[in-house]
Length: 168
Length: 121
Image (cartoon, chains in turn orange, green):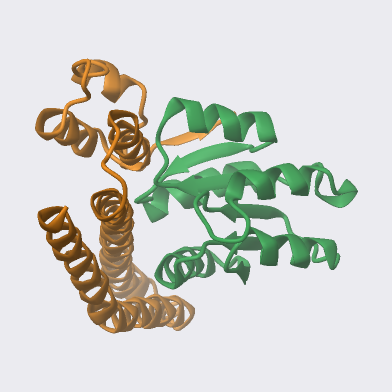
């Protein structure tokens, strides 16, 4: 019981550290979001300020370069928007792990764990994990008592890939 | 320009969705969870499209979709789910609730804008 209590304390301390890590990074990420927002607004301004001329020579050269530069910037801003979402993904992953660890700490600190309870904790984590790679890793490191639930390929087929768009 | 209600509990996600939509000229309303979005909708906020996350405090996205579909002025409004939830089971739950489509995060702005243009046109 004493060792279980210490283990529960160690897990609770780790959960608290994970929470702090996420909170410490948040302001910087929010600033990054603001910067992307400013760049996007700047792009709209650039488009609106696009040189308009009726001189055939200028039309042939300058606007084309201008449009290319704006299109290139837009591509970069869109790329930044996609990449920044991985922060949210990381936060979500951490939250699921924190919940799992908190549950495990509760089990260790309280009544001796029953197999059903540990399996329920594991199953809940598996359902909440957000990628096939995360679920596969869980199955390898912490398989269910009756063996892997499904083959990796089957797991992939039952979950849509990142960025997928499906209209019903 | 069409008005879009973006619902997500993550400020940075709301920001990224907002930046993407505004860059294409859409007007954007924001709500931090299903409850706030539903209050906006019940307050007669007219929108052309709703984009909602699934996992949110107070009211999740699937419940929001179900509740919105019960409002007469939201029966025909497209409701797009934007989520990290990628399981077929969850997607079918969203479809049954009345969602128009399902987009798995992280989204590509180009793809999202093309989808929205298709839906609202």
